[in-house]
Length: 149
Image (tube, rainbow, N blue to C red):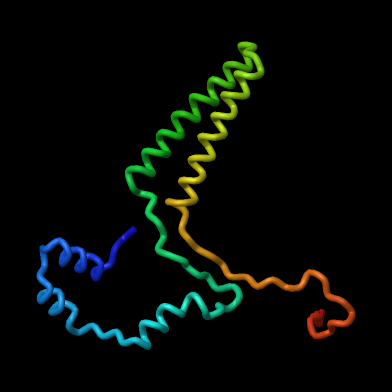
């Protein structure tokens, strides 16, 4: 995940690369009072968004890391191996236990690749939708919709 400049500055102060006075001088024009801080914290948590808005829960995780790429290469190689062995076993009359093991290993490898994709590649986006009542009784005319043609 990408870090902002304040976090980098704090890490440099912690490591001793930048002195505290230089960090204060760099952040001299920045103002953040308590009301702004509290409203920034409460904004996405307690305010109910309008229906249909897109809420980004966090920055989109990066799928370009070497570990993610290595996992997909590893998964593709093993999936081809397990699926190829299953296909060969079908034509070579292997027993059912061995075929189910190879097919199960193919599925487990694909599931691992899917989990990695959902966790570290796919962006973290939520579309807010509000549900309606599934059943509208006759005693609830306020929730009726008047459709005109």
